[in-house]
Amino acid sequence: MHRQEGHALLELLLAALLATLLAVWGAGALVNRLNDSAAQSGAAWMLTVKKAARLYVQRYGQTLIKAADFTELAHRGYANWSTPSVAELRADGLLSAGFPEHGPRSMTVSVLLMRRATCPGADCRVDVLLYSNQALVQRGSQPVDETMMAQWLLASEGWGGTVSGRRPDHIAGATFGFANPPVSGMAALPVGTLALAITAEQLDSLDYLRVGDERNPDFRGVANVAGDINSGGSLSAQTYLKLGAQETAFTSCSENGAVARQHYGGLLVCRDHLWRLGGGGGGGFSVNTLYGCRSSSGIPTANPVTGACSCPLDYSMVAISDSGNHPPPDGRTTGYICVE
Image 1: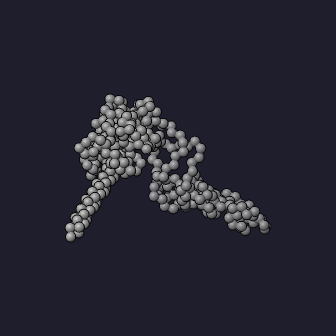
Image 2: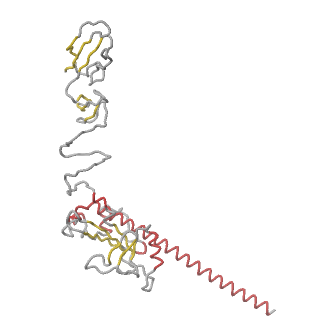
């Protein structure tokens, strides 16, 4: 009897131990899932700020390169162009009106623009560093939360970086690396700081001429434009001007002053909402009694303006030549010009 009671007690102890272990493991798994969720949402929030910072540099690139004073963009709502805040980016429409100023777990981020090479100047380049204002540390202690840092790096899809305990003098990720502190006069970022960056290489769009660009007013190169080009001045070409639009003479058109071409290449100009001949004349043609709109040798003699042996609308046909009666195979040929 006593031996059975001993076995029952042992079984109860084992069951209690197993239940405790399962509870601990379950709690650990839950904590990991919560941390993973926080890392993903924090990375998504910070990556959105990064996109806004990129738009900021693209919008004000030339001002940032030339700026001699930190208040150059004060008229656009930025107290200091080198440190635009989330609130300023949101007020400028670079973030949606409802975008939260704080990320998960009250996370905040700073944006720092750093210029290198000769600034102001044509060789000036801009790097952007985004860093968290709170380091990832264990609650109630100072050691860095390595697990959360690893989860953050995974959630940032390769774009993230940190200040690690192994290299506290560097802010580094897979796509960037900066000294810590990143600029002189600034305090070093603590170990556990999360970071994103937009390097000058990622901002290669600034190397291309943009609207209002003053770096090269005599821009030379091939430019392909999918939309309309509106010029405030004259448009001139040193070689050829090619028109792709084809229209038919004396059909309706919607935009007076527009220029197109006929299928054979003659120019048409939209006047009074009709496609009219751009050459200033109605052309000419000849008719043969045997071959019609061809010569005896089979060469077309149609009016190049109309594509037929006829005059354009509003033009009159005037005979200018007559070969007289000829026996076959020549026939009689009469030539005409079209005049208004």
